[in-house]
Image (cartoon, rainbow, N blue to C red; front, side, top):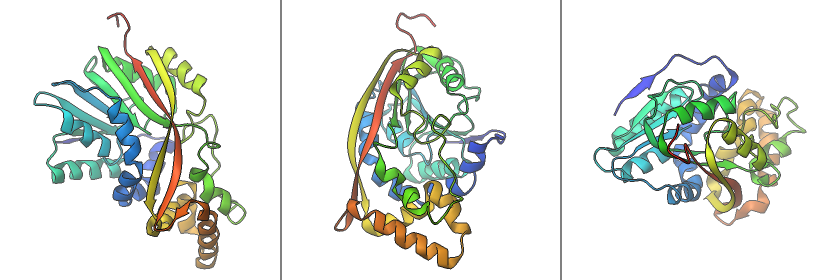
Length: 288
């Protein structure tokens, strides 16, 4: 198990995920893994791994999905996780060591990283492919790293309108925090793949074939006692709340917590995750 650290990437996503956002994900690793476990399971159910396969996990974060795939591989197989966030890659590497799972991690931008050509049998991602600056370039780069028989499998969010839980905090806080960073509908971000036709177009432009884009709706949960930690550290609110004064912070937290009341079910919080489960092939006829 080792980590390869590439040169820092000078763009907004690199700055975000190597700063406050990336550190928040590291600190919330256990909570996020628990919350997103049903989606990880759906992704793994759709991913056929053969003995000796080489797998790539794109936007691997703190490594949960990477390690889950690595555990499925027999001797001779290999699983690599790639992410732009140095803090998350460090956490993933430490986790692999701690759990004694053989996996390798690369800190770099999958859009431009020089992967070994024609190397991977399966390329997967759980919410890691919506943040590229140039989606076509990114998926073209991934296809070049794929074997001719390789399969692509990933999960991405559908629209913000279909995922109200994910925007409840910022909607509730917006009247109090006018400096909340706006979401860019067509730019990199959580809901960049909301449009099914856009996803299909990106895959076709980058050379992937036989695309299958299916809607899935999965119930996710988290402990109610962790709700405020989750909503005040992650997402747009997590980017600005630490910089507000104590009085405003308390007012925002009270307002936001009230807005989440419809999702609270006793000791747990439950919400529907509306996503796409996407599959594609590197080649339909054995040609590159």
